[in-house]
Length: 348
Image 1: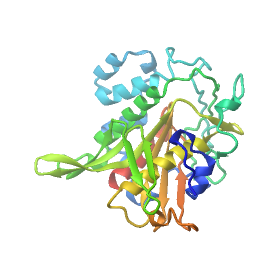
Image 2: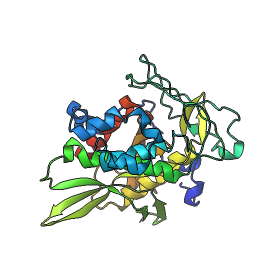
Image 3: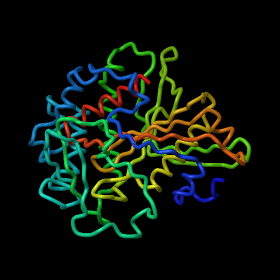
């Protein structure tokens, strides 16, 4: 039975009560989106190619005004590189290394991220122990093997950049891809996926127990359809966003999504499922989770009858969760994979 506790206290018990099953594979593209991606998504138009290729090396020392007025970048890319520079440049909140908050190393053979405490270990009160769900990006079962690889290096402390910076960078990246990605590149689209800026609170009731469950996201992607001369929101949660200021747990030198954060996203996905009148079998929710300049996509798949089975004495339905690898928005090969996932969401 789902414990009756506030959202901020959700953790391991709630994950068991919701019957969450986490997959070990960490693919580069969500399985849900595999049939909705195309190699050409990363080849055109020019604005997408410029995003993947990245900025000139001098961008870190430039002003945002200068970047957005640079004809090579334009407004959306200029804002993106300015937001990224906040985590890498001389004015970043952390001074944990010569190359920025997380140091990057190039290696053409493997694609991995390892985070190591520099001066102090994660404090007990900062951790969600006991227990974390090990969503590291260097799983032996990972499908990734790409060009620019990287090695993270992080100091865990209380002075991390605020999550608003994470959200600013993520929103800039997503909006640029949504503006120019191939699935929405035409002028005659009857429906478009757009970025939802506002944090949204949503509540739903379980079918049998009539228990109220509420959740708040950090924004998301919504679907708008053309109705005569206007675009009307027809689905408010094509994807939901969860942004954080830092990693809560590092295991064996790798970042993991803690049980507390997974439970938070589970609650948001559960409320989205229960409140959707158009829900069908194998209903899916895609959270996008970001921490500083890193992001990953997750898919939550509810097996048929999950909502009806939720309050039963012997529930037999589950939520299957699959995360992608972690993507570094400062990496060319990772930006390419981000484009593929977002274009897949646009077509999904």
